[in-house]
Image (cartoon, rainbow, N blue to C red; front, side, top):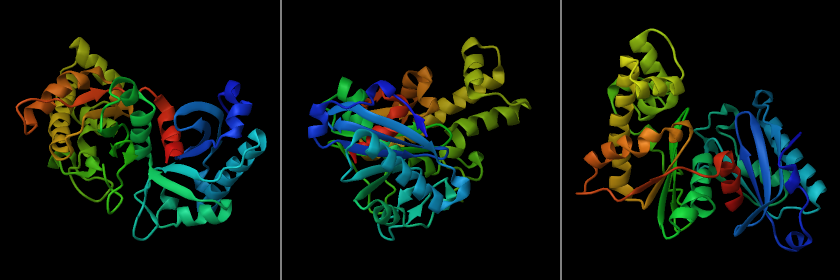
Length: 317
């Protein structure tokens, strides 16, 4: 058991008189839980994590979550009446089975039902990108800089490409539970095969691994994306320049498609690529070229919650 944020471990007597909210971020390598005072006061009462240990299977993950809840309940003296969980996949609204999870032992399993039977209270499950979006909308950069925003799209651009849609502070899941999955729209055939079974998805073009693969194919040697960006900026590497120009071009085309459909007030760029400053300048200019309007008013913001966004968003469920 790993404990973090130890200074926040002892809740105030005032907080214990209220109904704290609980969230769990179920990741591929760790399961992290947080208990916060309430949705309007994100004072952390307790934060703790355990390893996922997915190699031991689905039932083991269930028990790891139960263990985490039990330990925190004992330490803070408050038992949850409900729990929000962010997952790497989606709970299918029709079948109530998990799908599209890269922690593959979850796929096809009734995670919500099994957790409710194990823990004895209601569970709310959302995709981790949705949790990111709702946290930044209600607690993070959108609340800080554009509290009047009604439609917020949270984009995850890292190892994969995904997203979450929040309207008036609430997640929009959609009929099939796939709202925000812009990473699996077709972008260009040169992206090649995607793990989803399709070809040329956005994720095969502008994800971190896709950009590194493109550079390696052109240059003959591999290089981390961070170094590719550095070489682009100092102008020392023609292949790095070509790689980044390709990123900006296809970022513009793919994001413009999202804006043309949703017309959000704000887009928050999360994941590793969200730290690339070029996306907020040259990238936005590329988006403007393809938007079905004579100007681009959508604001692009960097997230402020860091790796807390997922677990805070789960609590807000």
